[in-house]
Image 1 (cartoon, helix red, strand yellow):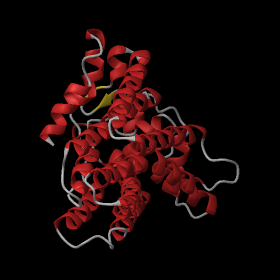
Image 2 (cartoon, rainbow, N blue to C red):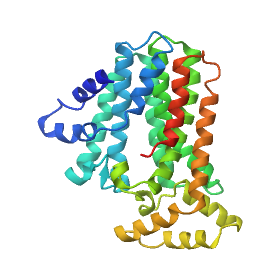
Image 3 (cartoon, rainbow, N blue to C red):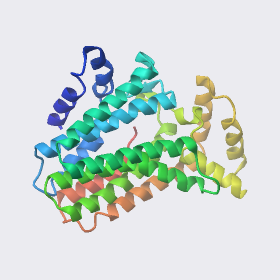
Image 4 (cartoon, rainbow, N blue to C red):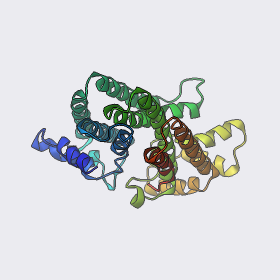
Length: 314
């Protein structure tokens, strides 16, 4: 991971002095580095970490960072990783173009890994875009909203985590069969991770997460707890507290006071616990995908990784 950090820092600077500050902004702010960690871990199923594995690990983190620049503009998020979001410092145009620059840097790295890696990266990039588009456009007429949302999570989050797991197996020589198993595992882990994020967004504070709680609520994006409220309302089984919450979600949440108030009330509703249970179920399904893997420390670590993504506080 120390090598990954060194290479990551080198990858976000050097285009131009004016660009270096915004390009390095989120990388310097830190982060969990879950995607490169997963690439390094799955490489242990083959010949271990080598130069290609390290290159892939940096590429997936650069791709992830690029999406954050775009997401924060679309969500009007004021904070990211405990620091002002890039668009708050340099404006929307610079933030968007910086995200594009990091996508380009990631693509340059992946090009060093061969045609198959380029194909996987392009397919992942497409799914990242489709996931954001589907979230923005909402479910089609007649489409079940929670199913639509899971599809969005699989594309926006699961696809890149799946690629991260796949790259480690591929470039360590673990073989195509293990790479496919780890791809399925990674996608399900990604869905579990994002469902857990929905809960954390309501149950943790900004000091813990580095993000403003309830940003999705303010932007009118229904995460899983809200979708469960709407599902119960449509079925006529929602309690009075839930009905009042849905009414308030239609109000102006522009002020910090209004937002924090509804976040606190939603946090106390049982749909938050149901969303947490759903995240845990997806994590268990991810671990089930690992059944064909050889017993040992790597398999155990991958199982623990899935659990930690659901049980974390931020």
